[in-house]
Length: 167
Image (cartoon, rainbow, N blue to C red; front, side, top):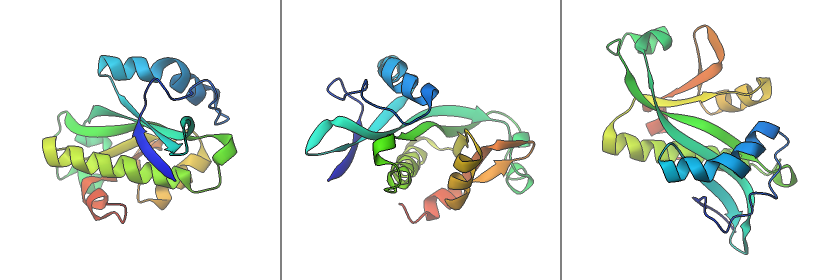
């Protein structure tokens, strides 16, 4: 049975391949260092029977955004200064396990964790930079909006996040 846990030493990062060299390299070289330094947190999907094998992962970090960069309907709601948010910095599924909706499962967990952060500290939503058109369409299916002038940057407003079927 799959479970999502914090990245730890026992996870086999070297065996992970999602097909995107940058995402592989981040997990293999940088993710634990960033976690240790408090820069970001990476969570992995693994099988309870083979807990060292990473089926997929996502990374969350905090960010700020100015209201002027939001879609107009949301920009009008906020003062124009640094607004707190969470960034889904990375999300990837191993090639061996793609097509099993693990990406949706990882995104659901990222949304859930973002809602928990919102309850504790306050934020306006979840942001992500789509790597390509396929990723862009994936995020749109889950309610993300493109940012004006930045088509590959997407935003899931707090209201949508809270109403999400994932929570």
